[in-house]
Image (cartoon, rainbow, N blue to C red):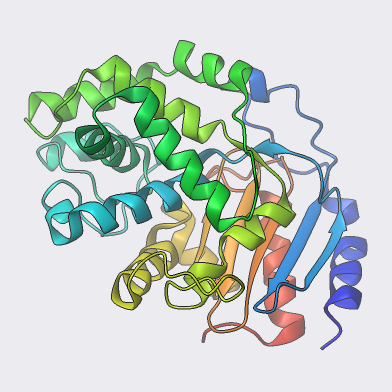
Length: 307
């Protein structure tokens, strides 16, 4: 299959839509990102990569980082992790306080904000200090993406901490239900730092290969997580990876994936490839508008949906 040609076709077809949607201006540091950018990368199991657009441009991965923290926590805690969080779709906005209140401080899944903050709290229990916890997360991402050094955007992180009142409220609400162990400010700082990690679509599509191959990186042959747990992560990505638009994404795209409000989306085609797309302008649910369209076009043109 000529993936290079398909990516070029997608880029051409979507260019008129780049002005649609809205960047995540509730995070001031993201408000000034040029919305007229687009990138898409595909990485095959032999490491061959195809890209189009601004595929070398770094951007804030935001909630895509939740896939990596969930992987780490699942490796460390196994089934015990599910006592803290559920794995059900939320059907509500990603930062909903109401649902968390109704469900006694137990987040619906690890990909909404409350769930990912809770996972970060669990990781801090294991690694003990905020610095060591963040370093464990970034070291894991560097390993799976074959990068020597990955950084976070300090301006974005500081902006998220300064304006993250709802995230702080979510953490305090979980703490009131005794489903939170550490100092709220420490956990929120770690959470904002890993959401502010900068990557590009080439790096992200490479990083997701282990989940396309039952937990084993097909290039390095290194196992990062068991086959059963990789299956669980992919299942949660399919059902919960796009907040209250997860069903719509599964319906139109048909791949396990995870979005971030920085405009990035990652997706996996089991036993074949990993994909990443980036277009900063978002739809009403906080997912990349053009990125979602790009992945729908990709599965339509290639027939590579899991359905």
